[in-house]
Length: 337
View (tube, rainbow, N blue to C red):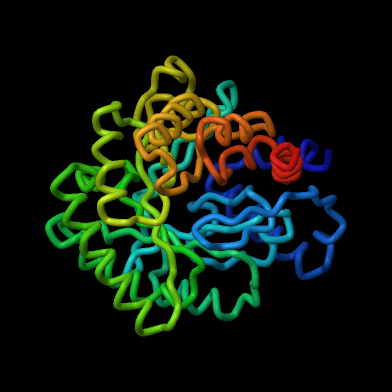
């Protein structure tokens, strides 16, 4: 109820300014103990990737790129948080404006471009946060790193975040870093996953604990491409797959203000494409590894649809912008039924 009163004021602001203001307000509310008054959904615990999740509803990467708002976000009732995408070196991302709302379609377009303060800063933030819940860390490559050296960036990030994560997500599917999605293609993905798994084994030995690795893929894949990715995931023993990132398609928002802005489209317009990828992955994987479903979840029933399609966990982000914290509770309770 409260968010429905606040939302018009937030939507009157530039989208990125509203994002920053919301996170700052969340931090203040957490410090004052106000978030403890939020009603929490009764979740059903689930074990995925060998990790015990208090409920199956997580925060998708992108909301808290630098891990600077963990305690406030945790108070919203998530079963896990995923932060990032983080790159080895700090980078400003793409020029502003780079975040746009499409309210009639309950959609968001972003071309942020992996803006973040770098892996070292993220690690310091996590250490200082006092957050004790399940934490995923999403890693990427710097914009100026060519694809033929992309593995160097992913391995550098993996080295830094490994001791601080419950799982690590390899993001090769953002449309906002030039040519990044080329890494989803057979030979490039085969080589990258091989190096990631080799380094994961070294780090598990070094730190005395195994941290699962997930791969995040795009919704703009045909069935043959999904089948090829599924085969590589199984061949290399990747621990999970996150489906999906944002879409470059615009059919669902054609003619709306901001619809022609470049970037990735999220929210309700990507729901069906994301669920299709989850369902197709599930058919090809046959339970060999878990799927985390994300994309267009704006209700508890949307979350349930992702689970029914084959996901073991779900994540939300754009839905929070349109529905507020009540969405978390609704999804948690719906999945517990």
